[in-house]
Image (cartoon, rainbow, N blue to C red; front, side):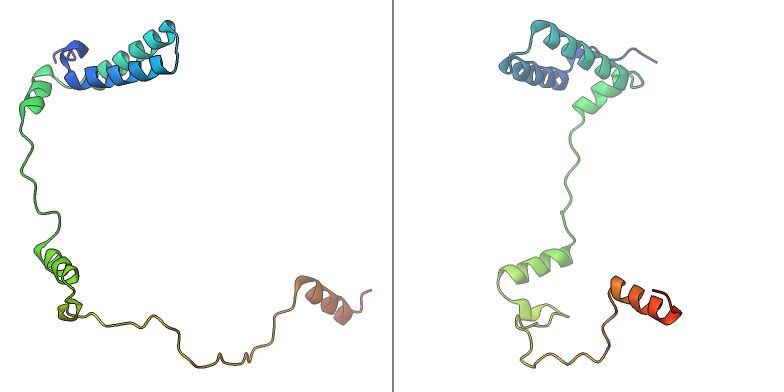
Length: 131
């Protein structure tokens, strides 16, 4: 197992640490605080990359990004196309749902109202002959 890659050779780390330092300086942080933060970042970087051989880091940095696939299946793209062009009627299984509530009045309640806690306590004590 080879040593962890040096932070000086990692452009991603350098860009990140630069952004952190710039932000700390803008906030008026002391040089000691900035130095401690940089040291913690370096330790974290080395710990995260300790198990990764340097050759692997170099290989992943040079690897081109794989070709992107379509974000959605073709059937979804077809549905989006139909929606975008206003042809919703051609989408199978879609029905129009009206945006209004029916005009009929509500039905009358047939159930009795449940007793409130103090009502149920009062009726229970009356039944048992309590005060």
